[in-house]
Figure 1 (cartoon, rainbow, N blue to C red):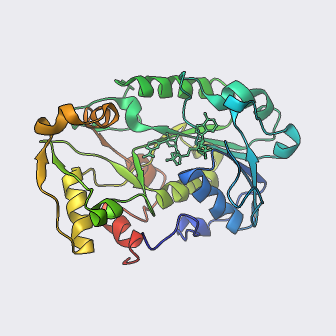
Figure 2: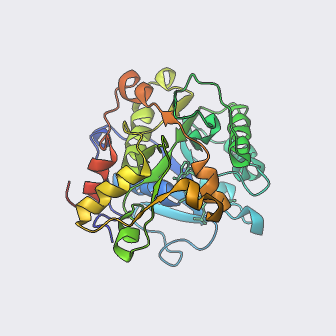
Length: 308
Ligand SMILES: NC(=O)c1ccc[n+]([C@@H]2O[C@H](COP(=O)([O-])OP(=O)(O)OC[C@H]3O[C@@H](n4cnc5c(N)ncnc54)[C@H](OP(=O)(O)O)[C@@H]3O)[C@@H](O)[C@H]2O)c1
């Protein structure tokens, strides 16, 4: 187990900014949503989070958090009175199986009645498609190559049509406590795969939290409508796995060439390895002045092991 917990509080420099006034609604209290909600609840903001099934803690509200069910497939939608007074919304819910946005399908009308000052929508850098390892930034035209990325771009566009104070955040792979290669390495199930020239980009969950807070703290006219959140070190997965093994002091598995194993990989794994791009977070770091807490996976992995 990683030593830090997803349920722990985060302590970012950005976290020292004054908290927004109002009430936060997190639509999708999963890995990132819960981390964000708990951070703000821990600092005294009233926070409501949704999940499809029963809430953590057997349905009991915890601290400043209130959990409600939002399970569109089961016809369960939060009642209007629970969302009354919401000023900030974070949406982490991805497109559904048909490619539609469950929040817009079921809650768009209700959201428009709320006194919203900020809506953050978490999207993916998959909307840029395969770039042969080249760099992309916010000015790069989208060119989604995968069906799920085309659905995501369509959902982004649907959100932009809503006339809400929206910011779209495009994310590469999210890692952090309990989302690292350490468990696979310890259990001997990690795979060391080499594909020439292939890199992956990533962002630590606490830098997502920090960057969102940083944006909320900016004057509305300084908040970019689209912002990439990523660290500074696109890297091959063999490099990140090698560093994780080094930190654990354990042996790396035998290297496997992508060409030799590709046909035996799952469709999902093949889709991830079919695209290669470097995503730039210069606008976040230099344009908006956000200082990454984990500029590379090295600081992030050490922190996850309590070695920071
Ligand atoms: N994970 C990554 O590496 C990565 C990379 C790029 C972009 N993203 C995107 O970033 C966002 C946050 O990622 P994450 O890893 O924090 O997500 P996560 O842990 O999977 O949490 C997603 C949340 O959305 C809820 N949800 C999913 N489908 C839903 C539906 N049809 N109706 C209602 N609620 C639904 C889930 O509910 P339950 O709690 O009930 O399951 C969960 O609370 C997601 O949109 C994800 O696609 C993720």
